[in-house]
Image 1 (cartoon, one colour):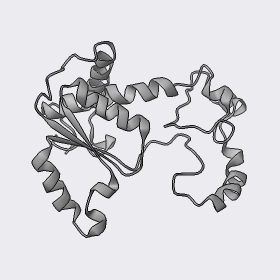
Image 2: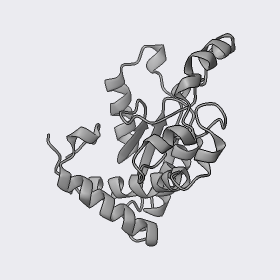
Image 3: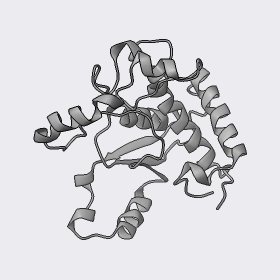
Image 4: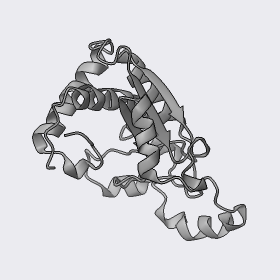
Length: 198
């Protein structure tokens, strides 16, 4: 598989392999520290993201590569260049490209995204207040349910502080495992070991 664009494209065996390798990288971060030696990985994010950027750059570095971070205004797409042309240029300088854009996993997130008008804040808070993840809501879930959030979280809005700090919260491990997962995907993708459905 050359491109990993959606989790739906992975076979069950691919997911199992990636998770097993991510677990290995968690205990031995420098396991394949020269897989990306003398190679460059471009990293593009449509919105700023502290944790995903750090995890991606760290994963590339742990594999021995050089990460190059690109912001939206670094690209010429907004000025008329096609995505195909941009991709061809990037491919001349990088062996892999990590893109963070729309997610297909649903869990709570901030109510106000970056760029939302401040004037909408009060109305959004009123409408979304009943959707806040609270201890009461967690109590309705199965006893082994976990809480995840892409961070940063606004305690007291989309989630209570007691849920963030509670036993069901996995947000800090989630933030950490961004790196090990990205590292495992790069490791197997660049070795051509992800079979995929396409």
